[in-house]
Length: 169
Image (spheres, rainbow, N blue to C red):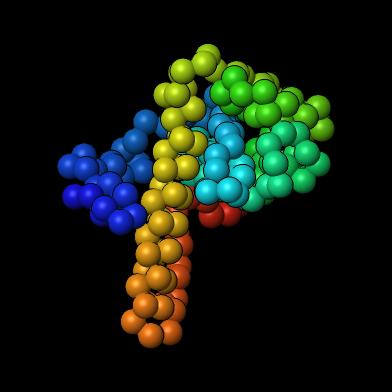
């Protein structure tokens, strides 16, 4: 089914439970995919941590390796207890610069991987996360607009995107 107003998707292939999905080996270094996207005129930085099958985003003033963006990524890695890491981005200059700046500031082993132009599946986790965020934002916007048109108080807009919770220790 497709929600036309929010351009959401619900295909016949349902995601397997977490325990059944192919996950990274415990021995492998965790991979964080990073990319920039836009919500209208708003620039958004998203990161997807493959080991937890979840992502997180923040609004940034502009693309690039700005101090806020670098610190934000460093805090996400720290929050999830990631020591050694692979930071994977597309070939976009701004994303590469961000990954390199994060690598320089980290004291733990950090490798930067840049995927080839057009190899979108290589950073598919963060791209799917972008799509989910955009679909849910459009749905919340539509719900709020419908509530306001009817003269009703705006509905409580809750946006939950399958993603990170703090790991148990």
